[in-house]
Amino acid sequence: MTLHSMFRKQEVAGASSDRKPRLRGWRVWGVAAALMAMQGCTAVYKTTGDILVNFGRAEMTPYLLQYDDIGMACATGEGFTPFLSSFESVGAKPGRLAVLVNTLAATCSDGKAWEQELRYLREMRAGDVVSAQDARALQKRYAAVSAQRQYAAYQRMVDYYGEVDGPKDCPRLRSDFDEVVFMTGLLSGVQAVLNDAVADGSLGVPRDIAAKVERAAGCLDNEKWWGVPMGVRAALWNTLPMIAPDGVDAKAELRQAAAQGYQSGVRLASVLYVVSTYGTGDMDDVRAGIRGFAAHGKDLNADYRMMDSIAEFMITGISDRLWTEATGKRTPFDGLGTFWDDQGPQNDINIDDLL
Image (cartoon, rainbow, N blue to C red; front, side, top):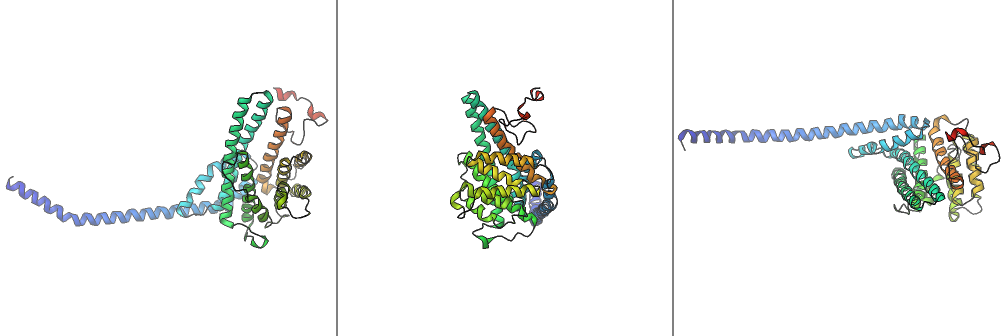
């Protein structure tokens, strides 16, 4: 090794040793800057989440409730639920909005499950057992998805407001928004139990939700909310007589709740009447509920069109099931409230349906 190269090496080594403290300093500043940037991003994300949640509560929810397009509601629910929920990781609190969007998302899978149920009925009528089995399997898959989303909505509601053990245990519902979220969570809890039953109990949704919902529904003003609170309680009394008060006439309460819905312009209680009596096999009441719903389609409450549209979506689903069981085809277009064995011109073949 030459002297020059040795000095050069020492010089380089010396220079390197001189720079080490500076580099360590820069590294410390770099790490600090990165941490500050990360904290800054977190703060920005949280602020964004807070703004989004506040906007959703103050603007999006009233707008959605006035909307009557179920397809749009379904798409909003599926598209918005994961996006909205993701802001929880940065400290925002979208819990109440998540009740609503999970419920809307369940309308997508509900519609698919019903379509497969109708296909199952048609295939059975045609004697195609294999295709019928395929349709039933798909129906259960979609029902399981619905149960998952509806149970998530119910759990979100419970996380925020708590469970109700008795009349003195009602949560403090400070606004109409709180009451809508609370009521929606209760309805989703019942639907989760029903859909999980269709899916062979694959999700294990607790059955005791029914009794909890029955108690909690008493926390809401029945007249203000279109008869739905009493409709929920009466539907559960009709289905589970062991939780009904002594001497109560559950079906009379259901009819009264449906009538309140007609008067208020939000026919959501009709669904409870029809679903409950369909479950107990009271077909005269089922038909009466569907006819009553169809006969009161005017003067609807413009502020809550979405609630009424969801009710129509569910009532039409049950009507389609009845029509398909009897005739192999669903409810005729614009024929909700009619039945295949009605006497009258509605049974005439409409040539436009064949084109």
